[in-house]
Image (cartoon, rainbow, N blue to C red; front, side, top):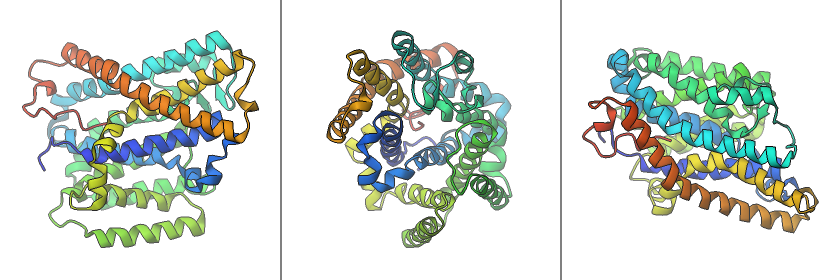
Length: 365
């Protein structure tokens, strides 16, 4: 595999994770009476899909940008920053704007979410993670911390991708996650402040180190990955801690990236890859979409909180499908054109945009 080849199976994995996180949020913020986690108990921990995002992000950043940044970050930092800005900011700005407009028109409160002026002021700078609690497009807290991870990666790419102490770095990252878990009752469900930043940086770094494992000459046999994942699942069930599941997610990435496995073939299927391409849109559109639906129902005199279980499940399914359809539309007609325009405007002629590989820059979230 060359440095710029597309990681299609990770696209598929990311798409499934985005749908799981969306469903988890819908069950909590939108239609709790649908009781989806009762029917599908594994969705009760679907917030760990964000941890999978962080691991995959580190893996993909190491795959696409690791070599050039580790060799000479001073020469390439602007290209890297421009590519990341073009990827994450336009859709983040659009979905946040939709959230603001919906609130201005409806003044509908959203349980456990701050829709205040001070929290809004942090949004343009991608600092929303530093407000106490979730706010506005609440899923975007991870976009805030991941932007910080990108900044750190400019300087940390050398030690992560080519450094001499990968095991020591991995041990430090695992210790950080263990400390976060201990301080939060075994859960890694931290989403604001310094704790959320540590969660992101540790898992992003582990993802970059996973890429080193993937690139090593001696690949880990699938049966060993399966055995390790089974032990981690057992530990998670027995202890009710989240950190063993990070090991499961790491195994999932390494197993899914192997083109010879059944999982990789499934993740490389057309529908899975398409879902992966839309995953960033799914992730950022699901909060504004369900908030708009709630506002419409409230304006019609039928608050979503009054729906019975069957009606709530039908509305949830319809909203999920609407988010996927909207995401496919905005990926084609907004995300992609906006990204290209920013790259053409800000990148030098000999920069990343003109790499010989047509796949350059398309593999990341």
